[in-house]
Image (tube, rainbow, N blue to C red; front, side):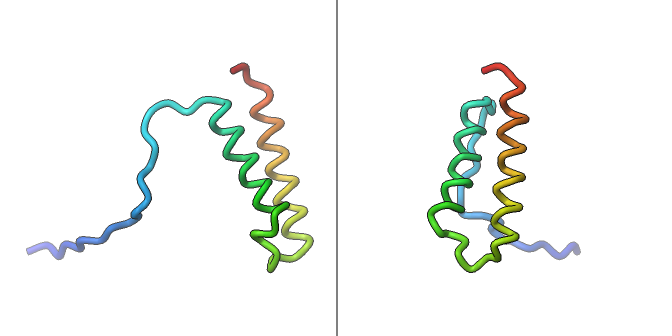
Length: 67
């Protein structure tokens, strides 16, 4: 008899449907705002600078596509 686990992976509902450039851009900007607003104050300066750099790269990538 197989052993089955009844585990709730996440309480948060995942959005369904298509992703569009504006939705993704908004989420990336929210992440950048969290960095500026001190959500990650316990992280090192190097980590925060690296995070900003990578999020900026994502925004640059998104800007290559039309709406």
